[in-house]
Length: 469
Image (cartoon, rainbow, N blue to C red; front, side, top):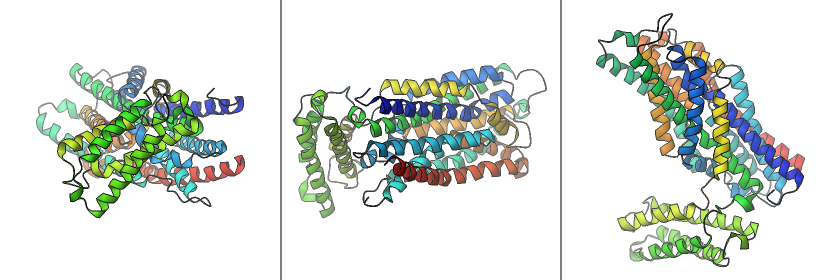
């Protein structure tokens, strides 16, 4: 398989199965985020709730795109870490996988809602930092710009969840003040009114679907990291596209390049433009010499990938408008369109990868849900969850995740929904209505996940490199 020996093929399959296991664990770790409210308001029976959530989680993976997955891949410049020693790539993969699975299982076992996003990102950054500290390594092995964007997203989203859920509860009390049943816990027996059930089921469905569209992409990104790291010749470029298309896009870029008003350029812009021109030439030399991917040796395909990404980075200052007034607005749009065209060769995921992740996440969602459900449903607030609280928290979670997916940023479903429920409890009875011990555990997990995973994955990476030679 992929030209590897039997041993390496089995190892690759094992790594891919471990990614599926991570996504499976992610499923049952995060199931409670969607189903806790419908279960505790008796809108759905547990079995029906987790089945619905599982199906929609899997479906979300197919429609979420790959923007978040690409963000995960770009967080760790795999082009820097991949070298001639395949064992080093295997050490990278093993360190990330073992750390992510260990922390997710540990927090699930103790019933502590924690973030799979924090876990995975901490593991990836830990490997990148460890690589940077190796003797003789001079390249930066972490995309700190992307890491900063992701870190800001993970930091702000729980605060946003708490504040927006609090505000939404305040608005609902004003709008539905003649419907006091919305703000009362469900009775000992019976189901809520049909229209309330429909609202709660709809918000549960929205959270499940949004979770799949965002968290599923993290598994896709992790699997692509593995495939590019271990078998770069086959997955460095999207071979479903025509290789000659690169040359066509290059010519369009040259045309856009010639429209630049060079007289208006600053010294910095001139330097950036020179880098861009050099990258266009290098890319041309690589892509023009071959008729198709079958004519390109594996190492050369990886070189084309590197040069496409360097070209993308060289174009970024222009597409972001850092050199304002240099490019006409129409030309600006043209450049952004060309960037999307050229990065389609590097920013992709095979359909079978998406299928594997969707199945793993969907099935995982249907099992192991009870531990975290109890925490979210009973231990965040001191009073029973009401219909309005459940709908508010899930509406906030679904919308926050959807926006984050659109922006290509990973977000913690766990922390957004947990903080949303805390916000509704605070709106109902102030801080006295919150269970401080549970919130302390959640906050502690939120604070510790990133550094613990960073140190653990970095240590394992160095250890595996030493063991594997």
